[in-house]
Length: 195
Image (cartoon, rainbow, N blue to C red; front, side):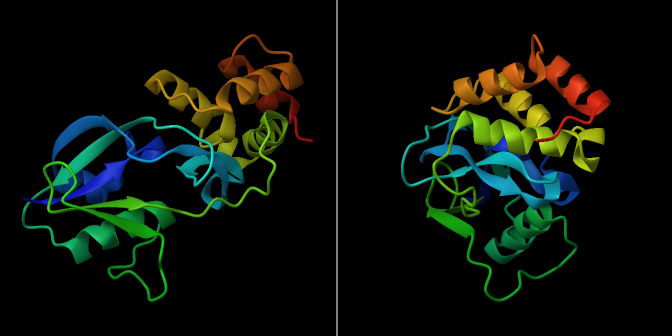
């Protein structure tokens, strides 16, 4: 049995060149833990992203990336670290504690996943998430569609549904006066909408 990577959020469609090159099979499933839009991502100019949560949240569609059997756990950890941090480090630095393991998960010897800490101060509300998403859309991340509005739209297309998603979606449309998320993104970009 090979090592696996549990992909959810943007990792499903964007595993990066390293992980993509060693993935031999993709298995659709759901996260075995609840996730929510509880992390403000620095690589997305503060956009809210999905992360594991201890309270609230919901299981969402995910993909198990089964890696080539030649890939060791250490090598898989390094590839996941590189993808999540946009780094070229060949070895995971000391002190990195957000790569978690699920031993014997599904058809893998060990399954790794990114458990980056929730960092949006409570209480989490749709309004707070919309504010972060609009700021990211008006920034450089919005130019590349790596902003919060685009990320939310991506999760909706995938069929994800968390407790906060409906109010987050409504807050974005209300703040921009848009009919849908694509129009909300266009308005945020053209008007430079930011709180």
